Length: 605
Image (cartoon, rainbow, N blue to C red):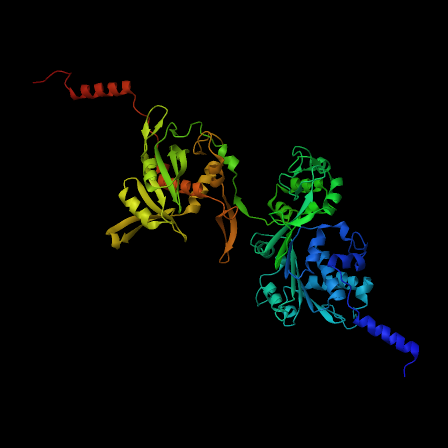
């Protein structure tokens, strides 16, 4: 029989083991039990979520049963790494189950285990009591009721075959594409969670790199995308911190003065928001989606930039931009590490303002002086036809004469056959109109056959073609039509031509111009695409892509078709011929008559 005091001690120990964990969220647990190490933290001691209030929503989503996967797109200096560490500490103390933490390289995994994770476990009494230091290895930490595998994305062996419930992936954009000779390391790591089909948690964080990088792709595919809205200290309007349009500074000042004088401007009341306002704004902030609603889903994504960091001033962001903007590499770091946005290797990017500035001095419908001919372009859509009429002069100078949309083929026929006049009364009609056959090829072919003297069907080439355009012939036996002309065109080439001509100096010969009072909708569609670098089949190539998914680019397509039509008519080889005035014509006729009377003007018989 056990002594009384021994039994009491045994009973207390048994009850302590059976005692359920406290009902805490991750942020509440961290505020109570997490201790920051003096060697790795700029603010060592007890963790306080109030220091970085925006992390509370991310931390607490980890314990929400609706959320299976958390995506955190982050800059540097916002506490992103500590977010993962707090979640890891929470499961050790509150919900022990096997876990895997993946870093980009095995060497980084070893360093982090030694210098951050193990010290974290030893500093907190709540974790130290469960940490089995003697049974642990550098890359496999043992705890009461669980283990944590620490691995590198470049090491397939460290990602292999142990079942895990919790998966943490840090800086995924720095992962190699393959783990040795095996598949994508993220896929290999996910495979380990299969046996925990209903209660697994996957967390991936990273500073983004490119638009097609892992973290940005995960963000784009998330069920919910959340941003941190903060209230204006003046009017209370909730808004997100943005660099463009938000941080105000005088670009003419030296960079150091910009650092001291920059401020943030409220998007609603235009009040000046200073650095001193930021802590209160952050404490009152809320995670919301684009509709202004706070909600969570199976895959929930969070996006944050460095402007929110309590350790970064508004002036610091402006200063960093000013010293970075002149060099692509440092600018890329600013975009990625400060704004937490993907870097687009943009070769050509135009704004609608740059189009509206290219005014020709002529009103809509008036043909500019020294025009050689007109061409047209038509983009066929399901319910309407977008069109353009463009005048062409020497050295491929061009002017938009008219653009708009029609609802029927008959209206398109009227637009392209209408007379257009210059200021001196000279009359022009469209010499050649290129019509897109991609949407409704049968009707387009019929129309172009019936109007073959001025209309031709075209289609954007899906593969590379050896020239700017290539003529093909198609037959439509069911309608008794044979040898219909169809031109395959390189749309990228003509978009290059247009963008290069827009970029020329105002009034320069060879420029690309619009009429006075041109509408912004047209200008925005002309600049709806930009040229970026992408990788395809292992090669880096330049392609034109929409800046924003779903944006309209119909007028850009019509201008591409009109440019092709001008090229087809040989505009680059033509020169303008001055019209013969009436007095000059009479003189030439008199000279001709004199030349015919070749013997002194008298009859020789």
